[in-house]
Image 1 (cartoon, rainbow, N blue to C red):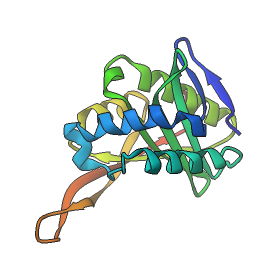
Image 2: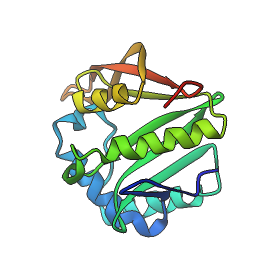
Image 3: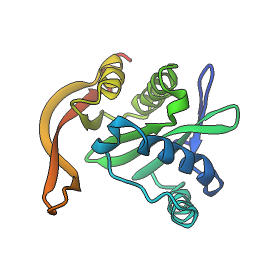
Length: 178
């Protein structure tokens, strides 16, 4: 389905095995963020990252699991994951902190949503922590609407008890104007 998409400033393509260093830098940057507590942790050692990114590259022909690299001047600055959810997709995303606040996430996600709409995909769903204001701003700016909430846990305290946060489930119908 998605091979390449170009925007005014960005080039969007499937993730490749050789992107591992840029993905490692994105994950390292994200791990330092105050919002890291709201996301699943990633192993950051070279072997783990290379193996995981190589696995994503193997899915390049799959439309069930789509992993897209967001490129600026041949550097991967962020990525999207799109996983089939019924007739639509569940969206995940992460951008290197050096590129936050510059409109790259909005520009690239808008282009991907238009592409999916043109392919007849009826909706995209995304989950984010309700305290992750940059993520909330991005989703709302692109027409995603809150349709539910959930308690989410990716971490445990010193006693092994889950640490929960409030998550929002957002949906963007693609049969509307983008």
